[in-house]
Length: 70
Image (cartoon, rainbow, N blue to C red; front, side, top):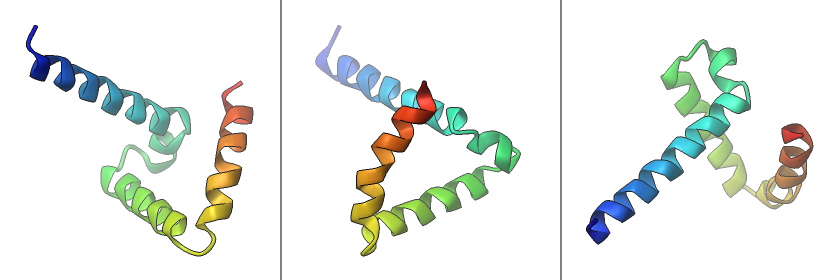
């Protein structure tokens, strides 16, 4: 297999895993699978993470995710 194929498969797997997190968090059900709403929510989250409060969100996020995934 060529190196670009390996890299493409790695990227595809990564994107699928990220999509799985959106489903696992319940965002798909909460939005009725409205992709514009999901994208808007992700943009809102990105804005929060880039704000002055972003440090707190980055520190508290992993702990919240670990509790939720169990």
